[in-house]
Image (tube, rainbow, N blue to C red; front, side, top):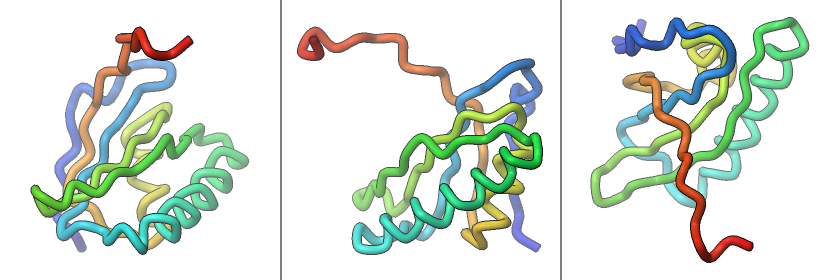
Length: 106
């Protein structure tokens, strides 16, 4: 069983933004497969009433890790989605939603 750290602030009501860290990183070539696996796993969980949505992923090669972002009702829903997709991870933390609107976006 993997060692997983879950941020204790993840018990807020409603949807919360989570960031999942994966080390070693997922290669850029494998990111589309990762996105598809996570999208499928989150669709199945949401259909069963555990609302979770994969927002996106980014590979940070200079730091040798991949970050995946989710909106979910709980950290447990994010854990289950990642386990169902059979994608290992090292931590799940609450991430503040970006409230800054770029002046370059219309």
